[in-house]
Length: 107
View: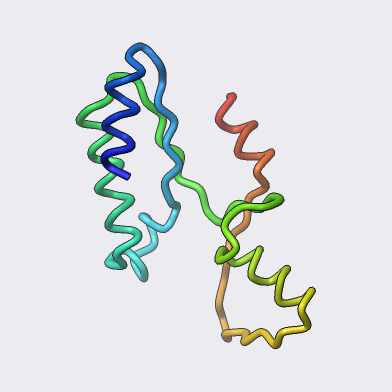
């Protein structure tokens, strides 16, 4: 991802880079996970290398298609396939619709 960001910044001078990070960076219970550490590293890379950028920290994005391993797509496929789902006590997830992200970014 760092190479992609470097190439994007280098090859698109004058454009605003919009990067979708994770809201998990503010969650102390997961802050040491590799995914969260990676996102923070990429945020720092952008801040140090791009002149014009917007970093958007989002939670679980809901919309058609997308990553089949994200929680919403996992649940949809499990229901369609009648696959049992393990539910964790006191687990929480925050969802945001793809159209709401678009609205926020445009603002």
